[in-house]
Image (cartoon, rainbow, N blue to C red; front, side, top):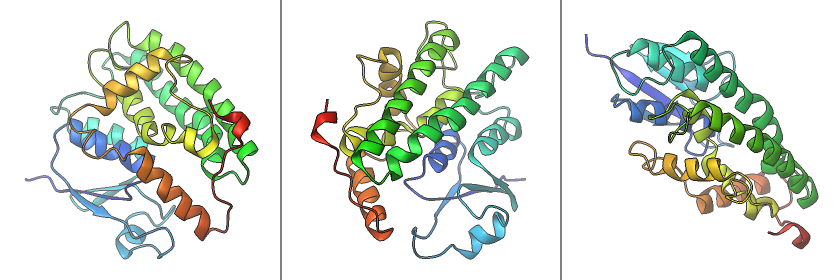
Length: 239
């Protein structure tokens, strides 16, 4: 039976990007359905396929929905075991370690990053960026351990943590414009800065990775529609 894959998403979502990266890197053909805009309501397809959380991404495989980005990435590895690269290690301990660091990204890094994206003042956003920087320093050390001196968290090829963290790469590059603090800085986290450059250059990633200017313009529009002040970082925080 021919596999039918449809991904419901929104271009700027780091979580949708994870799913697109995984599908593209594994060479799986799929239909991509762009969800309606932030302020225009939610489509019937999204509401029907993810009635609990009502948010993107949702993968629909042969008519059956799979919500949530990390679940989608791991599902694709299990549902299509012959498709390379394998994103989860075969070794149980290494697989647990990968899941731990993927969880760290959605716990520590995401919670620190949200105020950079949505904070009301430049000071609030710059303070949050400092917390993001601390989380990235921890991930810098994790990269050294997980990569075993190779190019990716997964070693020679991309793995779960690469895809999960990779969803944030475009947004992390907008940090200087949003709050005056440069993240993924080669001076502070040289391994991650080099990794991000390698990751975004991959076939399957570069085609869908949004550029920082487009993300910045989107966030300015979003803030205006929500009644938040524009992002104008205090001069003292510029680097």
